[in-house]
Image (cartoon, rainbow, N blue to C red; front, side, top):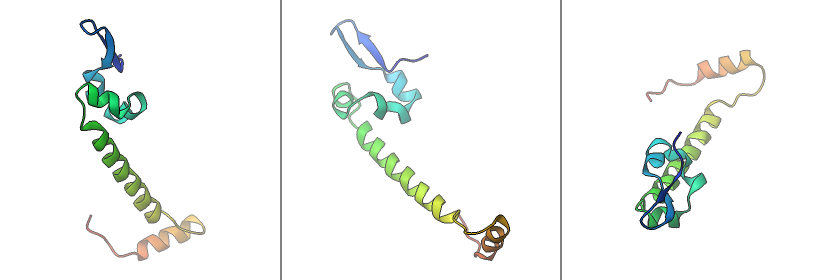
Length: 88
């Protein structure tokens, strides 16, 4: 189990655990503020978190648009088969 914080015995304070950041980058925003990340040498992390969240939201919107069909499953399959093939 990797804890999000580690104790620095020289400065006598809690700091960001680099192992936690490497193993769980998606959870960093739940445990640390941008100021804490900047202070402990992870200054680029908040920008990366925002970029990944924007990408995730965009992907969710695309998936929602692609999987929306009204009616029963038979009609949904028929509508899906009528769509032109995409190379992607």
